[in-house]
Length: 427
Image (cartoon, rainbow, N blue to C red; front, side, top):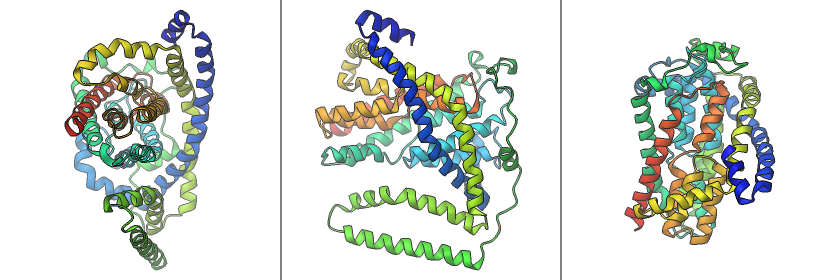
């Protein structure tokens, strides 16, 4: 905010900064209100899946890897299940589904945190993975490219996967290199955020942290319903593929069907797991959905401040000045100046970066080198400051320790690999 106001004072943009400050606060509240419904839906479905036994089965399959990455989190703790669902959603490109799972994971990890004022090692590692999330299906970017007339909308898939893998790997590596440094030690409990004393586990967290009895066996009626649903979906899928045959390449048809079908089928699958485990699906989903209201109330102040600051910085013109200063350095490295706003905004504002990406593709063409690079940059990492603010705010943690350094290091690695892979594949 300070940089924005001082810069605007010398450039005559004070009125624009004032407007952006007021609009930023409104946008933050609107964002939270819109997020409540999504969080309520997916937290409810997650609770059904937990009690139905699906997460327990997935935890057992992933236990060797998760124990190495998160040695301080018990395998049966609810935080482990929430992290699994969050990371799976991110890999599949379901950002809206991943967020409520991530907020739930942070709140549950805080119940294990011995220094509530500071993020634990597990929380920092989870943030590093989330802020640089590996996404195997950048469906949003592919959709934008297709809508703008790209001849090969999926062309950004390979550079995006390479870039996001590099960003996540770098962030995880930096976490392990920095976590023991004196500069990033956890703060004492008495420096906790005012009004946020050491959190006690909520009834839901306490209940879920206890080893739950195995889910019950499905009744005969439940088995028939599940089998009938699966059979009906398979028949419908075959008809859909048959109708689309010949209208487009097989890969494009498969991608289109996957994009349209995955989320609804994913939701139904979670409910069927609850049915198989003899869970009171509706009642349990309502219990899980109630948690969304508590999370929303906690994150409003954090989002208002960060989004107002970002809006003011953009309106003041400081970002444009930064682009002009950096271009002489990045240009000789093969990074075009036209893509600099994309790289600068991606860690700050998801909606801002999305708008810049669309503008770049419209101006230069979706299949141009700059257009492809903009898409790869968008998918190479997450909105770092948004993720850190949202997740640390949900857990009421003030000191993120080395999370910011690890995440920004991952961002740089992702941008570098995105640029190099685009030059390699598209010249």
